[in-house]
Amino acid sequence: MGCQPEPDLAADPRVEDPYPDCLYAFLLWSAPGQLAFACAVFALTAYVLDPHEEHGAPKMIGQGMVLLLFGMWCSASISGAGSVITTALFAFILAGMVGIALFVVYCYGLELFENPEDQPFVQSMVAKYGGMADPLRGLLIVTSAPIIAAYFALSALNQLLRKRLACLGCAKKLDESDRDLVLTKVGAGLLESMVAWRWTSVLVYALYWGVFFFTCNVIISKFTVLFLSVLIAAIADLSVAVVSLVFFVVGFIMFMLPPVPGVPVYLSSGIILVAACEDSMGLSGAIFYAFIFCMVLKLLAAMGQMFIFGVPLGKYTSVRQAVGVNSDLVRSMKLVLAEPGLSMAKVTILTGGPDWPTSVMCGILKLNPAGVLLGTLPVALLILPTILAGSYFFLASRDPKFGVLATVFAATAALVQSGSMFVAAYYLDKAAVAYKDELAIMPYDEEVREADRLEEEKKKRYAAATQWGVLPSGAKALLVAATALMVVACYLVQLFQCFVVYELTSRVKDLPGGQWYNLMTTTGFVACGIFVFSSCLLYAFTSWASSAANKWPPSEAGAPLKASQV
Image (cartoon, rainbow, N blue to C red):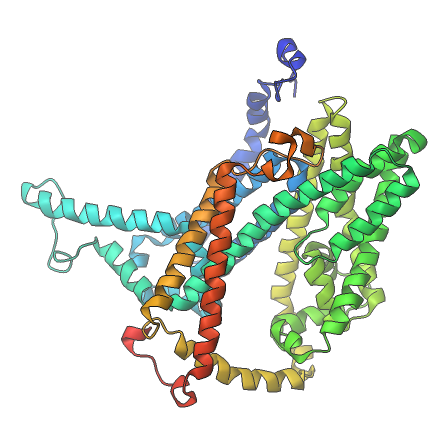
């Protein structure tokens, strides 16, 4: 783009970015794309607002949320490629969630919150995603609790000023319907709607979302990269054969760990194997060797996940029940994955889904291993750009200009992974309709059906015992405190510098004091401590709730809820 490094800055080792003018060149270069995106947003808004069009706004909004959640997983996966990309992706995800909320408000107005039950949009959302109401509300709480609190505070202040200034003609005149309200009419309607939520379930889901966020943003994003960087330094000077053997064993073990994605392993191979093989094979030969190595590792790991975990776990009725083998979603996925050959739906599910859960599910469903391997082969489209990103990060240590190519390939890998995830979700949504006849004659797992029937009574007793209106004050305080602490921990990690900038090419000796635990700053230690304490409170609450449910009288489990208990 015509960017040239400043000579004085390029010669100074303390300067990380010797290209201070590249930002302006990038903004000019990307301006057409930004304008196209803005036009697409306006077009979508007009489409939703057009009363003559039949469209599924709730479905589009749901798909947008799914895409953002997939993006969170992808950003954690490529964290080793550089903090800039990861930070940008997380910022995009948060901005996307806020953008969806603003889009809904803009399209349907603030009247949406005055009497939400009477709004067609809310009714259609409930009809389509009613079963996901509590998880989505939990996500709203853990991501937006401070914003919600600030909104209600401003609403109360707004209403107070209206009451004080109405007599002077300086504010909106209040009518009889909202004169006695503490909040504005919109705020009061929203609060009334939120009061009716099943708060016990909502807060528990909020805590689970917080655990998911911490797993992605800390355990996967930071400590997986830390471990792999230590491995890179430890085997850097060994022979090609020893490096390959050690990395294969470590990579296979990492694939066997549920929360660890495959992308950090591919990135590390682009650094470790290319560095080890460059002298004997040349750069192109080393990259090709790393590519073949990762393909073999991925395919063997997929079989290991299937037969070490999936097939044995599939023998347990409780496991099959937990993964929902009798649900339309899983039954549709089984039909898609059992298809011979390669289809877009099959390929995107096997290559776009999280590594461990996807392969283990294939084992639980007893799918044909050959078909699974065949459908996994297109993962090459993800592995190749990821290896190239790692290779150019290694080369950037010699010449900074290669850092640009590393960033480009890392972004390409993120785009491939997130795109395949979204396409997989799209095809799974269509599969329930496309395979309607097959699903009708497809046999159910009778053992799971019987277990579901027995579990239904337990669920009723659990729901009755954990109604917000009947929870003891101590249990309420425990759950509220756990949620508040989880929100604080998530905000600390996202908004403050909790970790030192650290990438796969970094070394532990470069951390403060040369100690691995100094990857975390003081704020990071505080955030992790708060998270651990919140998780302990969540465990204490769920243990108490299970005990209370077991003691709950069966005859009262199906009793209708009182208004105060909702």
